[in-house]
Amino acid sequence: MPAIEVKIDRSRNGFGMAFGQTSDGTKVMVVNGDLLERDHAVVIVTEERDQYLLAEIQETYDYVSAIEHLLDKDNLVAARALSLVRSGIFSLNKKYVFPVWEVSGILDYVFGKPDLWAVSRLALTKRWGNRVGAMRFGLTFQKAIEKLTKSGNQTARLYCPVPEKFSDRGQTADMLASVHSDKEGNWVLEVWQGIGHNPEVFYAHALVQQATGLCKHFDTAIIGFSIQEKERLFDECRKIKGNAYKKVFRMDGAFSMDVVHELANRFFPFDELIDEYFEVEPL
Image (cartoon, rainbow, N blue to C red; front, side, top):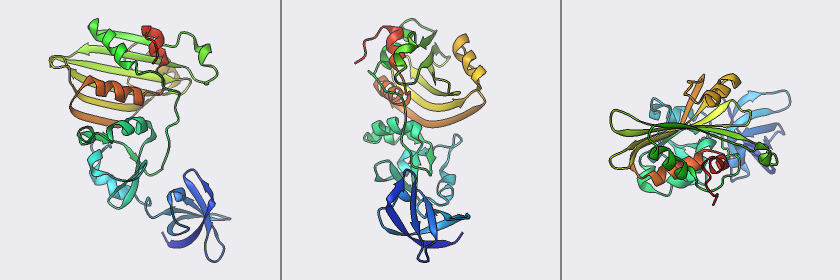
């Protein structure tokens, strides 16, 4: 693809885009152009359209080649391979990369903790984005899990009993939490949360050593269901595979349950329903 020089009209920057023109007046729409901190840039033309050229900044163009050899079986990249450019933007092999929006809350927490950053793996994208989620309340995930583990193996549906109170926020949610022990002496924790009528479900999984109380594995994913499958998941309170699975974060090592509680609350978009179910006062 050809490279061209473009004068950027910074006053017209939009989220994920910038607009400009070449020296001969050809209009150019630049993907990720809002990341530029200069008025002139060399960009890569990706498509010629009737009234303008579509292009992309060199810092993100063909970013796949920069990361493909670093992807693990879950398509995650080790966090320690990333270098911070500025808030929300990292570089890898001379390309800008961005953590997927679903882990932005988790990232805020683990980035400032070298021991956690060193054992974290996350999904990346070439498009810069912000998390758009429902309001978060008190860190009540810990209370929910404490009640489950004290009762032994258990599954609980955490639901929103008065959805009308959330009408001004436009969202309601269901959550399913399951705790059981495995043959290796671990608590196996699985949590699913579905928001409104969106068929995608947020999912978290952890392995906790019963002997030490330390978590040795934590991961999060987005699972795609049909609407009918999602309804079965929460109505029947049992695990359903789903038709699409995208892991977005993973951490292995030995870390306290406080870390798990923090990560879970930062990952799940909605947690007032946990307050309601477990009769926990929100902070």
